[in-house]
Image 1: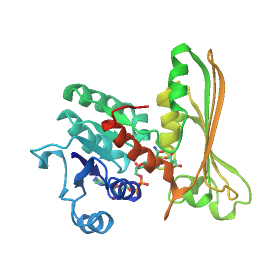
Image 2: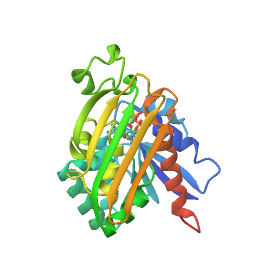
Image 3: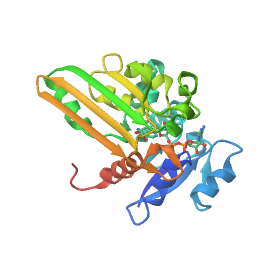
Image 4: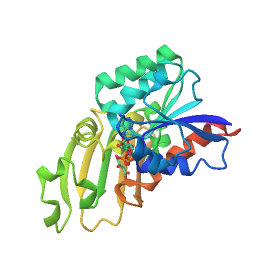
Length: 264
Ligand SMILES: NC(=O)C1=CN([C@@H]2O[C@H](COP(=O)(O)OP(=O)(O)OC[C@H]3O[C@@H](n4cnc5c(N)ncnc54)[C@H](O)[C@@H]3O)[C@@H](O)[C@H]2O)C=CC1
Ligand SMILES: O=C([O-])CC(=O)C(=O)O
């Protein structure tokens, strides 16, 4: 069996741990915050040993899966990378901060390992990344979510989420601005940026729409390869409207791909 340590115990972590059953991967540890042990046990069960960080381990896992908030990627993820353990993360928006990007890059280089970034709630990143080789002229990302997905974010200062009767633009600008201002809702903007033209050249638009049936993510790209438009309307994880189920599925898929004999 391969061992995977999980950082976090929220919606995505719970989904990931549940879907490892019957696979070659077993959850070896969960990284928690001090004082939150009971919450983690309630979410993930009492069988997974809890730790507070990489320094608590002498025998290291084969992989670390980061399903926590953005600060944890540099906080915990970098410590595992430095010790040579590959890390898979959903927190792509954290890389919009240049110091975080640099810190993770040097941690992976020091540990001679890699930070893997999950595709999350979007697809077509492979096409975008390939198109970059020939040269991209323009990449635009649009994210539309229902108003409840924007609660507890800066959107509350931009519009009255309860009073919306049509789509409202919450943010228009660079993917860097989107990711830094909406850390829980613009990881996809960061994914599009990292696969394509980068954080400053990728245009991003974030929208709250009371008529949105799910979380819709659209990429439009132009370049020497031609043009493409990719759009997906993702259903949310139960009880977590802002997180698309596909984002959690992409983490499980990426874990399984580490041990698959043939990989797409
Ligand atoms: N790439 C993508 O498409 C998507 C990425 N995300 C990102 O994935 C991550 C997880 O998302 P969710 O599970 O929906 O969030 P969540 O809020 O349900 O769970 C986050 C968990 O991390 C834990 N946590 C916070 N600080 C911690 C620390 N210092 N040590 C250990 N655990 C800590 C929290 O207690 C919570 O259990 C977030 O960073 C989110 O921004 C979420 C949705 C889509
Ligand atoms: O889950 C989603 O639909 C996307 C999301 O939250 C993000 O981009 O951070």
